[in-house]
Image 1 (tube, rainbow, N blue to C red):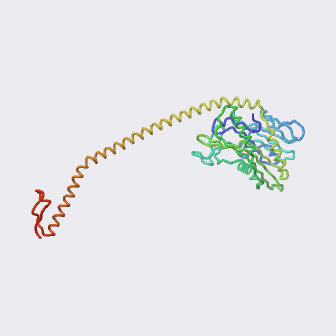
Image 2 (cartoon, rainbow, N blue to C red; image 1 turned 135 degrees about the vertical axis):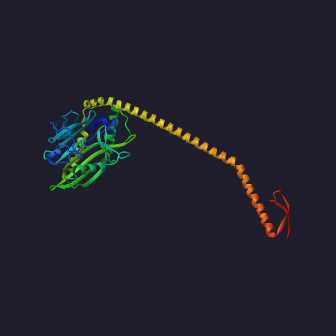
Image 3 (cartoon, rainbow, N blue to C red; image 1 turned 90 degrees about the horizontal axis):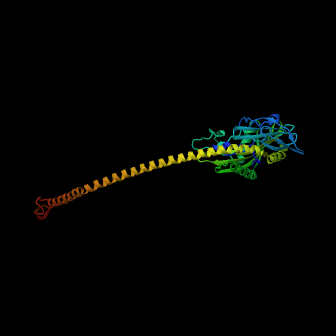
Length: 377
């Protein structure tokens, strides 16, 4: 099933990451470059040279540690490989091939490249969170060409002033990684989260020790959307260092090695068989967690609805009481207002009689407050 991958991280799907196939590059020069130091830290894994067989310019190399894969390499090159296991279901094969003169190194697989967590609520950039596949740095997503440049700087930037020599998209590798991830998920019965892939490559040159050097990184990155957090990883990574004059030729050889990479079907079947019950248990736990969260959400919603209804009933009762009070006081307020207006009117009449030196000769009431006839000037 896996024909072009450099790692199986089955445990990633059980946590907050996806199946990954990673590859590496060796930043060191000369003989030290035959083992993948890892641009993100010490990679670990087994370092075992193995014999090769075949004819012509390329020969077939078989991983000696677990017989996990075969790959075509240039005849006469020193080849080392290993399979780093971060857990029973999380494995990261890697390989480095170095030319006889030590000037060129091509690497497939870097176990030091972690799965990354996207910044978000509770996950600040620069932090590290624990996942099913180990520590996960919290970093913004990088597409293929961005990660290629980042990886090159981590691998060679401290020893050499890198000069960009071109970037390009890798749509064929993007489709390859996407198809591979779908096959892996189907093989173990895992439901893949929404996931976007992006392939790219970048080349660099520099002057080191009086010689012109060249470096290349080819990769595919992918971003996954989960319910509570996002993640991204490097699905494929090929890298090389070579004399500048050999840049184009080394790039072709590196791509040919990638195309020749074949996973041992028996080895892959064992991983898949071990992964299925783990994923089934993980999915069952996920369903239980989802059901618990749903039930809690429903209880919270019911409590909020009840509280809202109680608050509305209290507001309605207060409003009705206020309106009843206003209604009961309306008659007395009207009577008081009527009396006020009457007093105002009779007061004005008395004032006018005084001004006009008049006397009231007929009153409208016994209290002599409203005059209906006057006499005088």
